[in-house]
Image 1 (cartoon, rainbow, N blue to C red):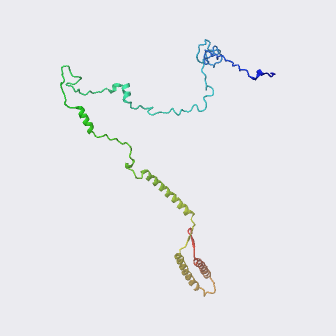
Image 2: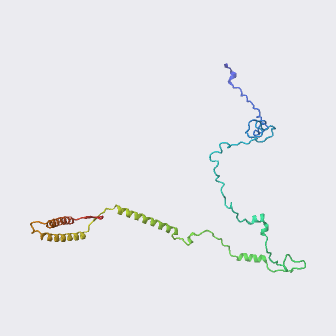
Image 3: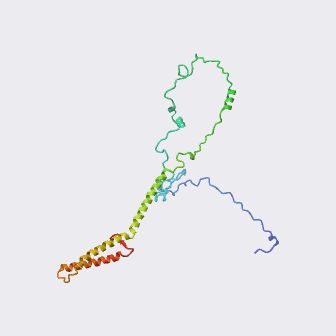
Length: 276
């Protein structure tokens, strides 16, 4: 245990340990070792490899996917490698490419006639040109006058004016086809709704008063006719034959049924079943 001392009040200076420089090998670390047994099988020396020590790469390259294959998704096609434009066909080369690759194609097949007499190149030695042709035109003044009198060049406005189109303000043709298709679809839907409404409609229909009165008049007339025939046989008291008995029962049954029908038709709000 350190004893108390006035000299211990001031802490001593820390000693800095200087690290020596790191030693780096002159031999690269990716060079295979000499006479190594750590190599893949399949070489001409199955026991040792790189006996001379002059190999710069591995004697047998790594086979990353020799056993289990590549990772999942590695065999998928590369999206950036697709068939480009004109990959299977040739386009028209530019003038610069033709000059560089086949300049013979630019040579004319037929030469124009020369402007000199006789043609075929520059003038001959004995052909003396016309000399001392001088003009009195002042080109400076003429150019100045031409520039002053020239009209200013108008800038061409290449902006497309949509207000002057042929079909401006008109309904496009495709909208007519769309409206027609929509109308046909609406008609078909309306037809289906009408058919469904007709199928779900009640089979009962109210009878018209005029038709009801006509039926009443007809039933009353028929009742009177049957009653007349029935009254003609009421004096017969003894029903000794089957025909008499049958006619009497028939007339009574018909009149009873007609009276029931007249009683039903005498009421209001009569509904008739359409299927009947």
